Amino acid sequence: AVTNAKWYGAPPPFFCRPKQDKDDYTGCWNYGKFCNLGWLDPPQTCDVYEGQKAGGFNNDRACANRNGRTDVEGCCWWGRGVIQTTGICNFGKLNYYLGARAAKEGRETSYGDIDFCKDPEAICHSKKHPELKWVAGMFYWMESVQNYDHQGWNYMDNLRKFVDGGYTDRGFIDAVSGIGMCH
Image (cartoon, rainbow, N blue to C red):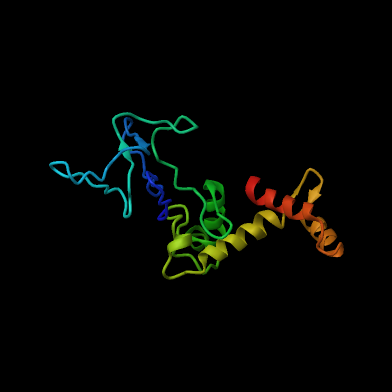
């Protein structure tokens, strides 16, 4: 990620990397750490990211995430684009149908030069393809939402009811939002 909060003590942008060895781990972010201490000799400054006011890494020990992992390998799958493409599976589908894998397997694609699995950040930062944040969102919408048919709830059937009913059933909007966030 290239963005992050700017509040006092806010952590830096997300980062990820391959696991370097069996003892590789990330530390914890200390929200209360003072780092702009110009009166010390030598002076200390906040230097993890531009505009940092406080906070810092404590790399003295490993800090496990909610899944018990202490490394950052495989953490590159946070949301990107207008509908927040997330997860290995969704990036893999995007790559299979529109990215480098499609090109490698002979399928016509405008984005064969991008491997979404190796560079998920390309969705938001490709200079050559600035439309990707919208393309990725539309792909997800077409592939996952429009095809949604689960436990008796079918997107296309309910869309027709919503339109025929004068666009007034808020339940349709809530259900579609749930599809995008949960499935």
